[in-house]
Amino acid sequence: MRIFLFSAILAAIFLLPACSSSAEGPPVYAVWAKPQPDQRTTLHYAAKHGGKWDEPKELAVEQGRHFTPVIAADRKGAVWIVWTEQKEEENILRYAVLRGGKTEAGRVLKGKNGGKKEQSYAPAIVIDQQDAPWIAWSGVTEGKMADIYTSSWLGGGWTEPLRAHEPNQTPDITPILGLREGKDLWLSWFGISPEQGMYVRYAAELRGGKWTAAGEPSPAEDVAAFVAQRSRVEPFPKQAGQWLTGAFFAGLDCEIQSVSEQFASFQQEGGSK
Image (cartoon, rainbow, N blue to C red; front, side):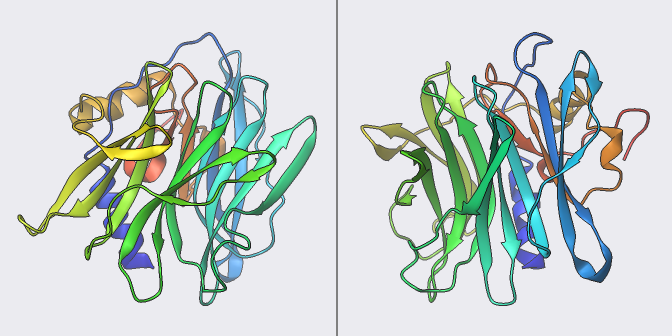
């Protein structure tokens, strides 16, 4: 798993499009995984109101190893968190939604994996115009390479996972979801090009309920410039300390709403990481 995540981190750092943030609008959120004794991790999140981060809260999850959380908030104030939990023989995709003072949590793929052991990695999230969360992740089926899958929240549950590309014999990893002009969903990920024998960026757009291959999903910035911009706009909360992995919710007016800390190193408030 460490090799997979390390490859994911290296690959994804090169595809982050521009994203501006405004002081107005919904609060900014951050979520992170915090190391604990016995190789466990706990999940924590915080909101930023009036230019100040609230005290972090711990998300109530079972004891275990939790990685790569992402976070987003809809227009009604519901906060969505999705992450991977590492089990002895599985890597499980989990979610939690916080709304009205209550927390609902569960497995994204519960009852939808045909009894096979689940291997899900590196989730991404975005909220569409109808306030429905969409998630994407890299999933491994037994005997096959990793593929990119997506699902959305509908009627109190997650829709059947939809593969975003044609079957292939190479691994597909590190998806990022975007919402162009606030309405058109796009997806980008890395896969190995059979012609070039190296990782290249692929992209797709959601059309008529299906993912269709597309060109560049968004103009890409120089990585250093992107990191500098995000650090100035929204430094990661210093209360997170030495987190393992974490993500910002940048806001609904951004093309990419949730950006993982492992895909770009953000400066902490009051100092550098």
